[in-house]
Image (cartoon, one colour):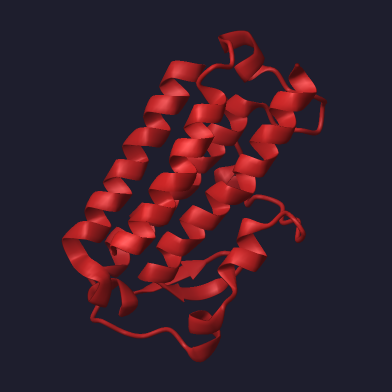
Length: 168
């Protein structure tokens, strides 16, 4: 679990460090009409992680089960962590009505801590034997869901850096 938490914490710290110095007005401004603002990206990340957490909390009540071979071998870093494959966000995690900077950052930090507490409480073995049904990737393990979260944030960190450059 330490290795997974290390990756999750590292990318989270990098993303938060990148947005921290951005002023409130710039944080909420879109660089162009079809590109999300930093506020919308953080709101999206929070909504995705909240959705993952809720699904894991629901699935933990089910008897342990393993995902199929496809779910275990899914190259999440390649599929999710890079921006080579574009995937439109499902409606339920589209960032409408993004909160202001302080609230967006607080929400994101809060849900991240809740997700880590959940994972810590249930442990690596139980997460390996839990099926998370991703709306695009299909079934992956609970451990895979943590990897997805980390790689999803990595993907958007690259976007955040691009947006900060455009808004300068």
